[in-house]
Image (cartoon, rainbow, N blue to C red; front, side, top):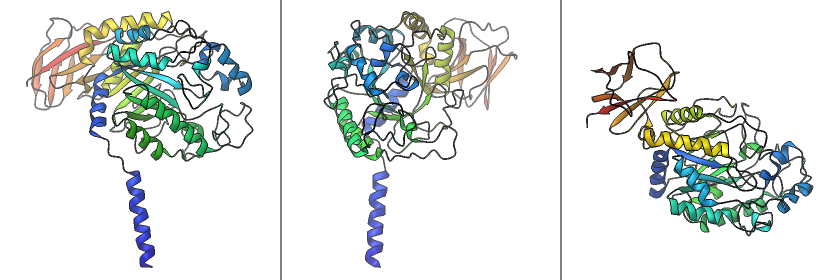
Length: 440
């Protein structure tokens, strides 16, 4: 009996140790830098771009894998220019890029040794990840990689228990051990061949769970995240792990994302999770699609994007804004034009976004607040009915002015906050910003 108890205790402590994740000093530092950077570019691009119907075209159109893999003969992004992509992001005020390396159709956008279903086996032949990594380093932009956990092409992926990929024509019994080995091989390549990688952005976990909003969201598959996550942190301790599973964070993850929503919202029907203490990120499209969709003209306006960026910052979150380049490798003109305007705005008002955290006042229907060590910024995104604005907290204000102008606003410092006189304040543009300078 004593031996049994001893064995049980050993098992308990070994298991507990396996479930414990203590981020490295490099990782903690990377988290702070991530939150300071605030604004990134998401890039959905790959073989699916050829069909001009979004990244889910294989699933949505019920295309079997035999027909779909013919895209390898059609995908030839002759106008791909890593310098232009990175410059577009940098000029828009973005500090990092997250690129699709492999989406749900299983096609790899790099010269992987784990599969022949890859971009270097197209007529293009080049490795865009290698070129993008070099250009990001040159221009001072962080680079992260999106990686799909699910696969509509491979036979060893557990498609029997998955919700998608049922029309791909797979007949061989799946083998997760084989698939896990494949994923580890690819992740090892991504984290050893392309320099410092800021994050691995996982997606596809939800393929093995019940629908959003269900009481039981337990995965039908043991993904063995302890093995996957520990491999990533071993290869690059500073690399941050996020997983778009639409759940509360899992042990080993370094940031939490929200799809098509800001934290605390659920307009998309995908964000039932609550915001955690981890760094937060909201991924949002610039139209209605992630991947290139030729007839999607529902482009978000400049005002909308600025207010989304500001709304994210006021909720202590980053904004990862998506573009879906065309099959030839070019980012659409509509995206480029709007991003250029965004860049001009952040050049003038970026101090109220970069390096800040959520402000002392919770998000309101009229706007949000952000703050750093020296300032509180009040972002008024919609007209207010009152002429007084109260910001709570022990704020020793020395000056209150309209950001970007010499216009000062009267204010009274109270024990529990600061009262600002906004009588006659003209609300203009996407964001009218009141800058409160704090005594040091």
